[in-house]
Image 1 (spheres, rainbow, N blue to C red):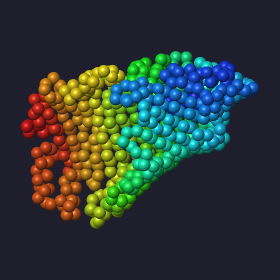
Image 2 (cartoon, one colour; image 1 turned 60 degrees about the vertical axis):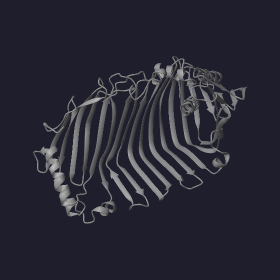
Image 3 (spheres, helix red, strand yellow; image 1 turned 120 degrees about the vertical axis):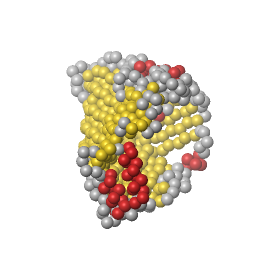
Image 4 (cartoon, rainbow, N blue to C red; image 1 turned 180 degrees about the horizontal axis):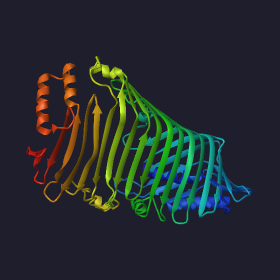
Length: 512
């Protein structure tokens, strides 16, 4: 249901908030007709409570999208979703362009019903200095919007159905508000073959605030974020004949080329959270600079790549002294192929050159025995997912079980691992093939590890009284079994292997 709401909102937003100049002429009535056609193409309807022709264009009151999801699966009844976007005016500017005017203060209402269950929420929207122009033709509609300020605030919400009582909901506080300042956007909507949206926007500042309070005070939480210097590029493809009001329609859309790409950068970001746990309050704050996020999804691939520049994380809890982590940068790369097309699944996370505040170090190392140089954490895993089913085939999922897996990764790699801290370092790479022909999957492969400074670290831990001498002796004996000396001082190398018969080797010596 949330996904459907998202697409409904996207359809509305892409048609309402975008604009620019063009060579062809377009009229207010053509814009309104195009919006209605696009809604119908997605299995929805778009109407106004009243549509009045005026000398300069059209006045539309209570513009509403309606989508009905047929009863499928475990649904008790069909689901109907309504999104009332309020009133607006489409004005013929006299130069072949159309102006879109929305009241500076208006309310958006989204409601849903499924049999006797249902719910609704309303959002109060305000804007200052908003100018929207639509140009081009109905085949290629170009939108340009300039906004000084705009904000949205959750005004009311309700829900009925299930085991949730009205009394319980009345005691739950949930507030949400979002605002933008200084935004300029330009988008093009190509309607010649399905719907393709592409464009950019620049926003001086984006912020939000959220608050939730439960009657027992165990879930109380507030969150906030402020980002500045945001630049975004978006492309969205909605294939012809798409219909999001049924599972089959959504699947056909994915097969037909449904997809999106978003590339966004921000100069600064400040996130803060304050929550109440059973043991006391927890506060956190994250300051990040030079952020970049790339997201893409289509019928065959989902990918999120994010990088952060200098980042500071502060956490205050009732358990330990305040924690402050400073990093030179962070990175995340998560790639999930949805079909077997040669793309590898990947999970990579890196925390670069990070340091911990002296108060935390002082808890276990008050005399500064351990080196407090910047640490490094990197984990990079990849695999060939080897899909055994068509992920877009709903019937195929019904046969999935523990013995009939949807994916059987045959080529798994540890492309990089590094943990460097307290004067010691451990790095590794590896590869593994998996054979599924037997009763159970049989892995075969190796992992190469390199360590430095481990003996020095253990000596320091003994000197600090954190590690008994006899345990150090046992650890060094194990290291001698699994590793061989490296070229440098206090360095060790190790290759651990497993063959197709399940035999395990360490540096060529069979252990099992």
